[in-house]
Length: 75
Image 1 (spheres, rainbow, N blue to C red):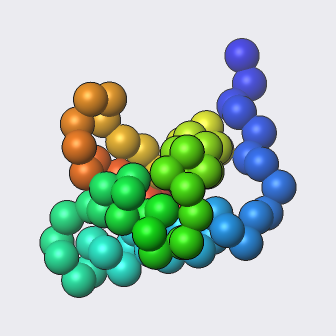
Image 2: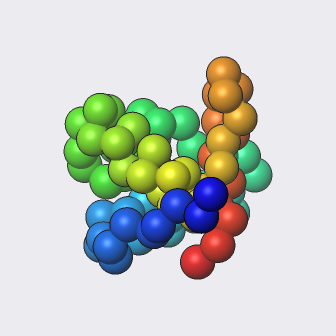
């Protein structure tokens, strides 16, 4: 089985990665999905969609069922 293909570059996803990293630097822990949605100015469901796509591409990881577990893996 081959590795998942990264989705095409997406400015919103890059901003989401920036927001996750900035939240870590400022607070010492990951943002919630609602925090990401608020920073990006999008709906909760839209933030979930983009985070799932970033997970699929291997750019972020999060622990299932654990709040605030987002981590940026690669830039």
